[in-house]
Image (cartoon, rainbow, N blue to C red; front, side, top):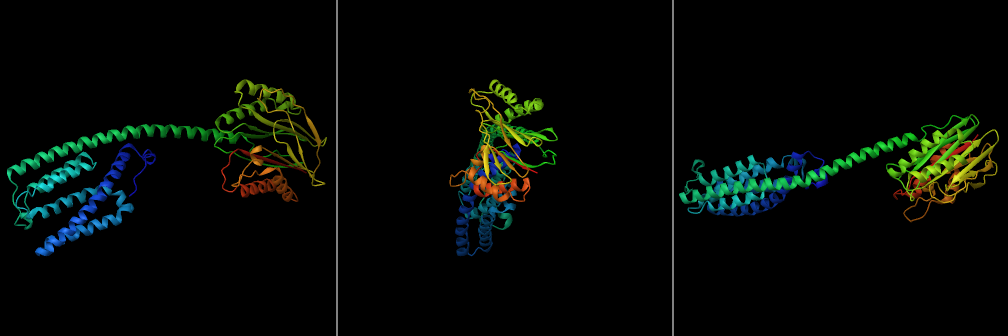
Length: 444
């Protein structure tokens, strides 16, 4: 029977928590009592065998066997669920065995019952259970066993009766008082931890709700454009991540793809992302020329956050008609471009400082030609900086290698899955330290 921890007890209702706490304490005393009674039973078996007392011999043998059986069954679910009832019945049975053991005494047969009265102080039971046990103790100590055929049992004298009665009442009152005091002490700690637990659960529910809101902010499906195939995935390191990506369909032949990363991760990052997302939707019509949008976002982040919070952001405007990709970057990792004809890789998009850094920044557009068959990989730094158990970075070279292997005759979704699968194999069971996002675009 394993003693529950306080963290486990706070999950239980108050009455059940008190019971489980006292049961664990009572079990520790019960184990030593089983051992003590077992050795006393062995002594009783030897004494009864020497004096030819068959009834007493049978009682002591059964008592020893019962103790061994309870010790063996102590870890079973049935024992744990019914421990309190088992304990009460065992204590009642031991009072009867003790009465049998003291039936040979002519004088002082009540002394062992006085010791048992003090022993019962070690248990923490309900008031009714304490009352029943001490009442049974008094009855077995006072009344002889002539009614079951033990003729040598002497009636307790008047002084012994008074002593047993006083000690029984005193120990009963003490047991009730100490149990109540221990109950109050435990509940003071339990209620404090239970309040903390409820607060943690409330915060967890709010964080989970914030996570759901943030996930709903990310695109559920890609834009329906016949000239591109697109797939993306975002893996937050905590409940609320700091990565963001979005598509803005400017026309049937023009798409603005935005990807960003707030410094750190968690609730604060999620709140900033929510603000940036709202601004981007308000300024959606201006994304065809993203430079002014970046300037406004930079000013917004400066005014609404502290100096330690910043955000990298990249906007790529893909234009089928002109065959160009126009990039504006604020400290974000460059776009990995695989040429559809030559198979060569190029990193495009070295930009200005991140948004909100209070550094002098000029957001200059960069234009590059694109053609059907080209493969564009957008990602956040959490992807290439992911580490394995050997403290090695995933890196740009490995990313290019897995994209190159998956590029031939594959859809954007398959390429994305190949990248994530290779990353998972590389990382192993190493804990994810930062949010990771990848967006794969194949031009048709």
